[in-house]
Image: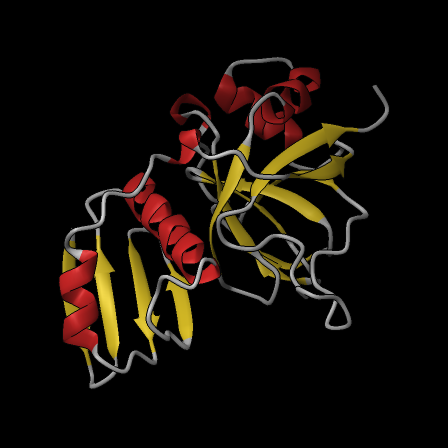
Length: 205
């Protein structure tokens, strides 16, 4: 873990791997909820970093962080967000070929695991979910689509994502969901927030 001052009121905490970053992010949220964290305006997780912005005394907080020993994520018991999915995406056959399974097995394999939102980005409500075993990673499409429908469940590299709205995209689409990923009238607006546990539930089985 490396803690760097960014500007006058922010800290960037860097890690060697994503699992460490996600465990640290969960620890930050836990301490903030318990009132055991100095005022931090914004907490922004990414693949291997966590940005703490709006910190009154960055150096003092950096010294405290150096002594933290966050629990591994698997040691935490948290609610699970279930996302119903129809595994009817246009790239199912291509993904099946990469995995070496029949197309009908793609949904079973993907829905068998539990996922966690590592961080959000790209579009409001779009979460980058980890949890897919390394042997099932797939490359992005060679030619991105100009429009991916809202609710598309897609894969790219180690991540699973669900498109909250229609937008261009190069991920491999394996399914669709009717879940509302982003609703400004909801609190929180995003269905999938950083740190959340997620399960995909196959429909029609």
